[in-house]
Amino acid sequence: METFDFISKIPIDKGWSEDKKYHVTKKDGSEFLLRISPSPLFEARKSLFELLQKIVDLGIPMSKPVEFGICSEGVYSLHTWIHGKDAEEIIPFLSEADQYKLGYESGEILRKIHSIPAPSMEEEWDIRFNRKTNNKIQKYNECGLRFVGDDKIIEYIEKNRDLLKNRPQCFQHGDYHIGNMMIEDGKIVIIDFDRPDFGDPWEEFNRIVWCAQSSPHFATGQLNGYFGGKPPIEFFKLLAFYISSNTLSSIYWAIPFGQVQIDTMMRQSQDVLAWYDNMQHPVPAWYLEELNS
Image (cartoon, rainbow, N blue to C red; front, side, top):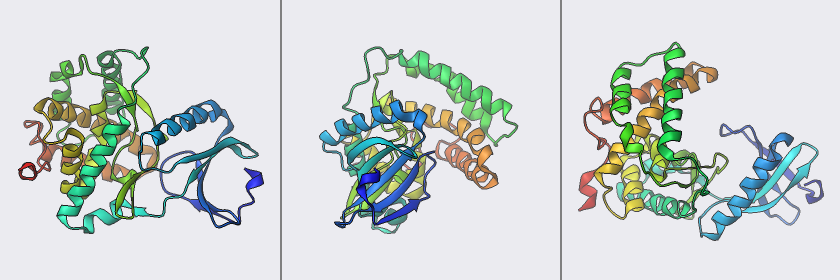
């Protein structure tokens, strides 16, 4: 990295990653995203860089990996710079038709991402995710915070664990929502692949709550784009399960980040309960049925 001779190096403070991120420019005017990770993450970041190269080959609009290596500050990776704006800042102000169109586009992109298979030795999904869910319930119960209606969320989880059986697994972006997307030349571009995983492709939608809060048209479009039309009822039931699980973990996750984040997650828990009528209806209220006609 030291050989690049950047003429500018501007820190980027957005996001929750432990990586240091910079917008850098070379003498020839070319711009890049520079990520620097702690040295102990060398193997993990190397694997991620190689995986990103495979994802680029699928034709995914994204910040493309350019170079990877070791520098004095740790492990670095260099990626092409996206000349766009944050989707969550732009989309709510577009026409409803354009919001839906971009959401549909994001769903089609995700379907391509999910074409990368999981390793054959992955543990069966129901065993793995039930263990994860048990851990989330325990941590929620121990964290000292409660939201109104948490019993409805936990009851839905306990009654629907069988939905996890025989689910396929694939590569997951790991944090797929409107906050990790940009708009460049009127098109969706996906960013922040630094939480990759393998699992049920439908679990990837557990963060669609952020899309729905920003734009129900975008969120509806994302589902329709992924499925090529209205999703099956089996999907909606599982989505409610994954969102329920995430709602519990979001509460104790927020605690170290202070009251603002706690308040945000508390409000989101009430949104979830309202969307699902206290977990009585698997199709969330934000899903716009009329857009399928």
